[in-house]
Amino acid sequence: MTGVFGDLPGQDAVIAQLRRAAAGAAALLSGARSPAGGDRGGRPPGPAQPGAMTHAWLFTGPPGSGRSVAARAFAAALLCPSGGCGECPSCHQVFAGTHADLLLVRPEGLSYGVKQTRDLVLRAAGKPTGGRWQIVLFEDADRCTEQAANALLKAIEEPAARTVWLLCAPSAEDLVPTIRSRCRVVTLVVPSSDAVAQVLIDRDGIEPARALAAARAAQGHVGRARRLALDASAAKRRADVLRVPSLATSIGPALSAAATLVRTAEEEAKAVTEELDEPEREALRRAFGEGSSGKGVAKAMRGMAGAMKDLEDRQKSRATRVKRDTLDQALLELGLFYRDILMLQLGADVELANPESDLRKLAASSTPESTLRRIQAIMHCRELLTLNVAPLLAVEEMALSLSEG
Ligand SMILES: [Zn+2]
Image (cartoon, rainbow, N blue to C red; front, top):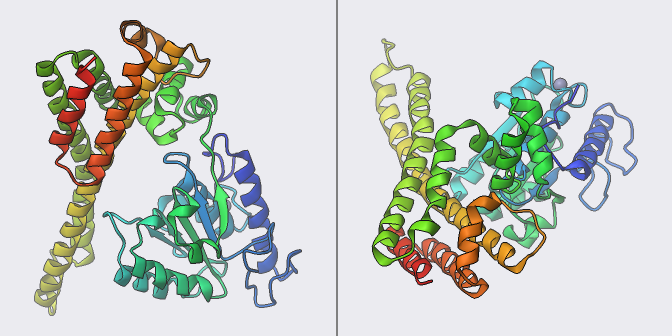
C-alpha cells in the first residue's frame, strides 16, 4: 500500500511532517489530548506549536515540485478514517475533487478577488459533513489581491473549530507577512531527476531511458516530465523550441524562429484551454437544467445567460494566463539549453537538462561570454513579457540578440 503520499518523489521530509500532523489531527478528533495541546472542542493548536496539527498551512516550492499534490495528499490523510490509505471512498473522492468536505480553489485568472474570497470564507466556516474536517485547498494563493488577502487573513485569524486552510504559493514571501506568520510552512524541494524518473517508471510504466531523459528535460517538474514522456505533441513542441538556437544565426532565420516560438506557445496554450472550456460550459448548462421544461425554466434560462457570461470571462482571463505561462515555459527551456552550453564550455560537472550531443556543436563554436549574453537576452525577454510587451516584439528582439554571435 503506497497510501496518499505516493506521488511525491524526493519529498521524504515533507511526507514525514505531514504524516505526523495527520496522526495528531486524528488524535484530536478521537478526543485524546494531543502532545502539543489543542482544546477539548477538537480545535487545533496554533502554528507556534510545531509537530502537531494546526489549522493553517502554507505549501511552498518551485513550480512542479508538487505543492498542490502534497496539499491534496494531506487533505486526503486528514479526511480518511484510516489516515490516508489511498483506497477508501473518502481518499478517492479527495483525489477526484468531489469530497463534500474539501473546497478546491484554483484561481483561473491572473488575480483572485475580494468577493470570491468572502464567499469562500463563508463556505469554509461550515461544519464538516463527514464529521472530521472542513478543508480549503487554495492553489496559487499568491494570486490574491490585497483586499482578498485581508479577507483571508480574518478567516485564518479566527478559524472555525474544524476548518483547515491549505494554501499553496511558490514561496512564503509571496504572501503578506500577516498571513504567512499564521501558517505552518511546508517547503517542498526540487526532486532529483532520478526520483522523478522512478515515478514515471513505477506509476506510468515508462521505459527507464525515456523516463530519465524526460525527467532531466523537465528539471524536477513531475507533471511536465510525465507530459514529455507520454504526449508526443508536447515533446514535438519542446523540440521546436530547442531548434531556435541553431536557426538564430542570422537576422532572417532568427525572426522566423521568433514567430515560430510564439506560435508554438499559442498553439500549446490553446490545446490546454480548449480541453477545459467546453466541459465547464457543459457542466454549467447541466446545473441550470437546460433541456428541461416547466414553470420557472424561462427565469432559470435568464440566470444561466449571466452565469455563462461570467464563466466565459473567467475562461478568457485563464486563456491569457495560460498563454503567458506557456511562452514563459518555452523561454525557460531555451535558457536552460544555453545554461547547459555554458556548463559544457566551462567544463562544469553538473547534470545537464539536454543530451550532450545536442549541445556540443554550439558549445564549440561560441564563447562563454556570448552564451552568458544570450542567457541575459532570454531573461530580459521574460521580463518584458511580464510588463505586457507584445509577445512577438519581445521574442523578436531576443532572437536578434541570440543571432549576434
Ligand atoms: Zn482512505
